[in-house]
Length: 595
Ligand code: OXD
Ligand code: MN
Image (cartoon, rainbow, N blue to C red):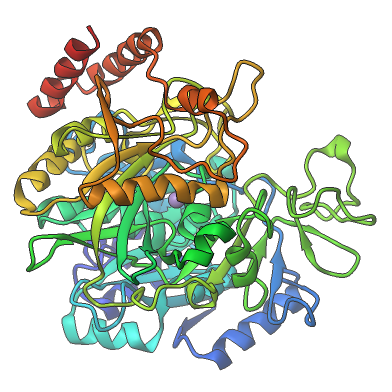
């Protein structure tokens, strides 16, 4: 380490001495052959694309059907976020809380900086200035990512406002989040995703995967964002934002948090079924993954999408499930780890009913089901948000959009009714804190077990999560006109293991009940867990759903709930004294109501 500190100063690597020193210190540590400051221009992008086509990082897709779109195959050991090597490096262990991995700053220096050392020998070091949020928004936050990955540069150009616009912002404000990223030798044993919330800095090494390597997304906008939000009275949430337009052209905005790969993108881009579309209902997409929310001058909670693109899960996306995502990703799109057809088109499970003949799998082998799926279950498409046919005309509004409903949800085969509404903000915070979901492929680990994922933020909270709950409770006191809080579950199954609710576009019917409730209408029954729709309150016209099936979808089964709250209680107990009194009080009240 002595040699490191002579060449580089930790202050500079954290960005404390300004941009130029950050870049100089990074170069001294990483020893690249060249340094390239990204301007974000089309010419620069095209140059990078040519280089990636030449070195095999990109494979050109069919330019007639997928113009300016490319396939990238990642290292098979690097296909998802790696929570086990993701650390929150607050000054004390308590700062990170019981749900995060913690490392001291000193240990981070000793263990992680040596992996960065000289790792860019023979490579170009790219300096990516970027903005999260629209350039004219007072809430935009600038970052600078140092990387050796052209793939990262290309993705950041889609996912953020990158280049000169961000550099000008940084030169004017003098402030930015310092992000050091090197793929190094893409070695899972030497992979670390380190966050320094008190320093406004991120170091990520050994991975090129989106959630680990596109530092503006999970690292800045959620982990550092949740820390900044707590300090400055705003909220960074793992939420989609949509606008529901009624036939009178009133648009009501809602934000919804579901754990990774539970359909946030599909809900954000919902296309109303024909009978609703004919009446004049529309859904507008504002964002599909992240919401930054602040109290507006009018006393409402306003949300903005800090991203500029979608980094969507490919498998399961089809014209029948999400036509807008399919349309959004037909040009200028980067596909990662999907399969390739003989026509050079991307393919993944669910795109069509059967795999086309002659398919090449995500690892470049002729497709053989014995090797597993053709596309990796966490394969992705990176597409510019403006290409979405349903993009809201307000998606780039500097103040964001006013939120009337917050919705939590998860993938639950049992227990959770199709939809229910909280009794209050504080009760809604408990509902959010109790979110659980059956695990999916977006993170490494076992698929299909229920894990608690409070507010869908478990992997993304840059705070002690007990304090994060406390911040929710405090925000509830501070917002004069807070949104109403709901919980939905599209995934309830019957005794034969069959989904009871059709989901996708039909989720519109649930959104309409939420809309009614927000407007002070919508028939509901008060139950121990909150307000559940009255038997006829959800419109099922044209669906093959009997009153009995609807009753089963909405059922609050007290036996199941006793077991559920016991599990929630055990989970909340893990927070010990970090758990705010308001959450405990709400939990006790729920137990009491359940009898
Ligand atoms: C994502 C995730 O990539 O939540 O959005 O994992
Ligand atoms: Mn996400």
